Image (cartoon, rainbow, N blue to C red; front, top):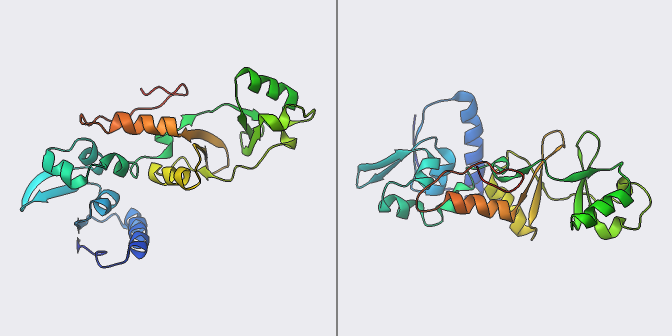
Length: 226
């Protein structure tokens, strides 16, 4: 099937909605489609492979990932843009950059014991889960240091969360919109999956999007990229 700029004349809001709907349909019908567009953002979002042409000549044929991380020449670099690092965030998921199994406590833990541990580790806040690792929220040290009861008595809900499968672009947008330095990742069952912060995000972007065009690695709990 050939589609020649099918969303070119549509306003940005409806265009994005149609793109998302088209991708859902494509997951079911699995048809081979040649999708023509001059919008590199659209090509990256919609394509499994991108053929970049210059004056009718094929310059590079690659996956969106390879096009952004390993542009063949200066023409490709200029076409995808100097912000190709940020564009690639739309292809990466939160799970690619999050710190898995972050430090947390249980809502049934004694507040004095948790406060003592937090002071020893110089922590101002701590995530709280139940016995099955379902995220309950978080506590601040100042709210529990003189509380004789359980952590669950002082837990605050976590209002801004992300899903491990959510793309990094949307997660970063949440962080910037709400002026927060951390986003907690929660799976479909409501269980704590990991934590994304500005340090891990910057490390992934910085080490992936250099002129050498490297690939990102897995971040360990200690913050190292393998």
